[in-house]
Length: 597
Ligand code: AMP
Ligand code: MG
Image (cartoon, rainbow, N blue to C red; front, side, top):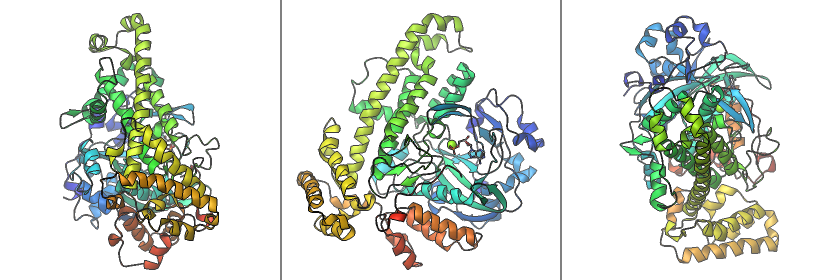
């Protein structure tokens, strides 16, 4: 169906809006949309995308079009005007669609509370049904996807100033927009939960001041929800207890109930560990634990694939565990636990080895935001459910509330650790072609006996991290291949190190009843590495978005990373160069970049 004809809703608007500026005022006095201010109440402010002098449609993700059920639209002017936000310049169009808005949130940035942040350069447009329910041949996709909401919220990044722009310009440059567009769709293709990207629009007459002046762009993004842990941080900052409860009810009903199945991740966890919790859980406890488990799963997948997001503040941590708000991200070329892709992250807070702890640190802040709700037992929740919370009652219960909340957060920590380890070992087993049946009740057993030695070995050998797994598909030739690619490997000690690990692995293979061919669908042949993105960005910038051949080639390879038959017959020389490993040339390897985007 054409995008214009797909029914559009906006359930986030059921939450309270900023009181000061009504939808009507925002639509009639556009400047109000673009004036930074403190939003004292409500979950969002009404905002129109800012008008730009020229819009140049570049491309749409074929996978995104398929998943949204959008057909026959790409060359259509109406479609192009919606995905760039230009359509919102037409008052008649605006009357026919939900009022666009920017979300309010706060955040803990690098360990410090930063106060009100919010969508400083994003306008949310509307939500549309998720039409396709995944046709991946792999069950893992079907499983995780069916856990998710059946709607997608569409938004524009780089669409101009909003009440949350603070001191910044509301713009996104072409460079970072291409990076976000490619990585979102790539991670989705390899089975890592992420926000998605639909389209890219170039703004040739819009300049932003970064390290130098750069031309801008708009990314059309979509996700089951854009709510972040930081959304809760804002309600805590305001002391708005009623707001926290309303937001939680919205999340429970709208996001965590799919086809009558409530809290799917928690349900799955309790099936495996029925006696893990020895007290009765309220709806709010369950919501909190569901958020914790989803984030544990995603973090485990990032670590298995060597993906790093670079800025994991609470405002960039999704309640659905989606990877989001891509800035200085990178896929690790060689295994180095100290690696951080963010050149400004001097303490490596968001580096590889600190990532699981950083995410749980964020989830603990969420536990504190929710302290009152997860501190009350069901009886107390019932007594306070009608209208305003009763302050008198709460202060009487204070001690018990603190005790209970502390316990829930402790349980959450244990669940996070267990679930992270389980998903991490399972994901590595997928990459190694090993059956999950071989994993003990305590997955840390296999972590210690197989995965820790694997990573120790990869740290020593310094071959390409991800391509190691594709080479392992031919176990008989792997030592030869590693030798060919690594001068260091002439070192006999190192060779012994590899062989020692291969022997452990062969021990597992001898007990394995899974077809190791299966590992092909977990080990991508191609990764959009930093230097490849740079090359495509430079070319697209230089040609003013007129020559999209490199961008289109990168799309094909990044969005179909397991299947080289979909990479096209064109630019074969570029293709083979891009398949070059991260360890061929030091200057191309383990790149870092800054937050400026
Ligand atoms: P990030 O860490 O990039 O996800 O952004 C942190 C905060 O800064 C969010 O509130 C963003 O909306 C805001 N922000 C980042 N860049 C800009 C920009 N160029 N204009 C307005 N707000 C921005
Ligand atoms: Mg952000």
